[in-house]
Image (cartoon, rainbow, N blue to C red; front, side, top):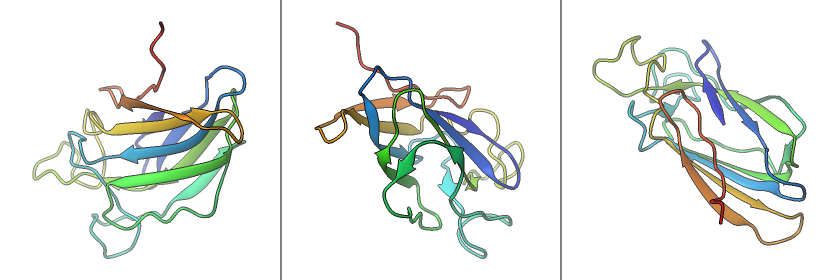
Amino acid sequence: MVFIESAPRDRFEIRNDSSAGQRIQRLTLDLSPSAGKLIFDTIEGGTGVEVFQPFRVESGEARFRGSPVIQDGSERLTLDFTRFEPGQRFVFSIDVDDQLNASDLGQIRVSGREMEGALLNAVFGPSGGAGAELQARVDGNNRARAKAACP
């Protein structure tokens, strides 16, 4: 996963680089441990600052179950996929704001290492089969890579 700060819509790009037959079944992004105390700003006049943007699919071959509802001010986003095969990518946008008293670009923009520490949980598995959960922390470059440990 890669996070890209971009006014007015912040972008998340996710790619399934797993081996054949291992689709992504579910992704959960937890912003609560992020350095910037980040939240999703999805409605006007809500918890965030000025600009707001709800969840929107931008591109990609992956498909998910239902329409995700991300509450304004929430620190967590979960997507249940019906199809997210190896080699496919998925891009979505939403507004993310920080909750710091003194941030580089104000609370309206995520800057520097404010995304660092956020937690990505990914469940991988075969179509119709049980999945295995993997975790990754977002690094200082706004990237997280969930991968299985090699034996």
